[in-house]
Image (tube, rainbow, N blue to C red; front, top):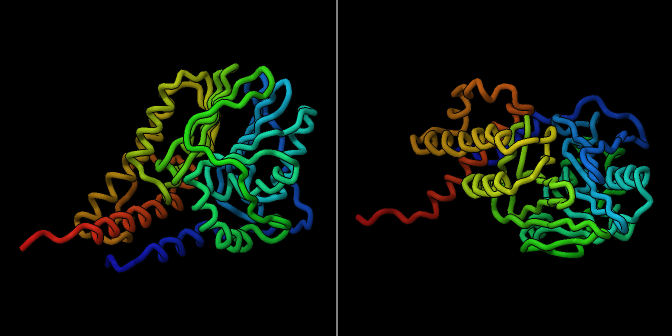
Length: 323
């Protein structure tokens, strides 16, 4: 039964996130409301949901840091409309310009609103390893988004071009406020960025951290990602803003994420090694401790297919033993 391919897995995932009843509004509003979590640090909380017409793909957190001279934004949401409304939400908090937008990684729920920031004159920063993935995947993802959330939300959305690539940590001065950009390669995605505000010891982690939601592993190397989580946990922050889910107050709160990722690496590997198919692996009940994670059915299903695909490729790449 191993003949089932990644395409079959993706088809099942698309069924799992099929659109709800449409927004039905030619000018839909995300209703973005910045929440202050520390001095000069604001979050726009995404929903712990699938992509639907009802939410316009607003499922990820975005954030911004206000300095004396300028603002640094982190992630731009899934559409140009989101990016424009995020800029308006920032403008309701401060009249300082958004000089820098950090895109934590190439996934659509974090990056597809970047063109709105480019039009506003912001420098767009992304990990150097994320750019090829963005270039490769963006057009097909836009087409899929049109089916999932509808053309009203997507009006005017085109993939913007980052203006600066980052491979190593660097510091941005917002005017008496130092913000560090941290670079991580090959964990959750080909290239992830995180941001730490030194004044408040607030870490904005992007999708290196999921809280209360099943982590997406489609482009992940899980052992590398787990090492990166350990690195983040040891950084001495006071609060952490994850890519999905609520505010994190202590490193121990990352343990459930480690547990889930460890399981999603170990169980499919053992199942694949026994000769199971992805569907046979999915017939084994998940441990009850994961049942409360948001989007667990869709994400776990996608994880099984992507992990089996990875192990199939590794098997193909390994030469047969000598006779």
